Image (cartoon, rainbow, N blue to C red):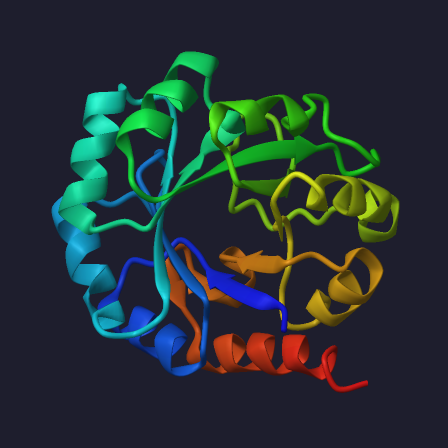
Amino acid sequence: MIDIKFCGLTRPEDTELAVALGAAYVGVIFAGGPRELTPARAAEVLAPTSGAPTKRVGVVAAQPVDELLAIAERAQLDVLQLSYGADTAQRIGLRSRFGGALWGVTHVRPDAARPDTDPALWVADGLTGIVLDTAVAGRLGGTGVALDWAAVAPEVQRLRGLGQVVLAGGLKPENVEQAVRAAAPDVVDVSSGVERAPGIKDPDRMRAFVAAVRRTEVR
């Protein structure tokens, strides 16, 4: 099965639906932008995952390691997703002190097949997941801009040997089936593609996204 991650959540009811739909991951933002939450609010938003197998992901940026550990503890995070892969000191500091998984985000230009930075360099620092997102100047994610999935497919296969590969960037119910068939990632990550407004998910679009992903598994 392809795992699904609903990201940029800001309301408990959206988390509750994500869990009911069988999402493997739900994500909250601590890295700026209109979906950013405080750790206390994130804990409230993620509360519906209690007792469920759905894992909690926190999208972070260049915060100090101690601050990230405090965020992770308050929000009970299972995964820290490091924007732009963070730096070596941050990765190594988290590897030795954070008990959950570490994912690094690498960005690919819409007309390119490979990221500017090779995430293979991060694996030695403890990262076990690699998020491929679209490069948009001045934005960390949630842009709605899609990758060229056929072009990045060889990169997905190469990176799979290093860890879990998460495909993000412009995914939505109308195109996720095409993206999965072209690139065959381990996880698909959606935020703006199932929203009514930034951080406000549309239940019908969430259901449609899951249905589209599941169609790829039965043909």
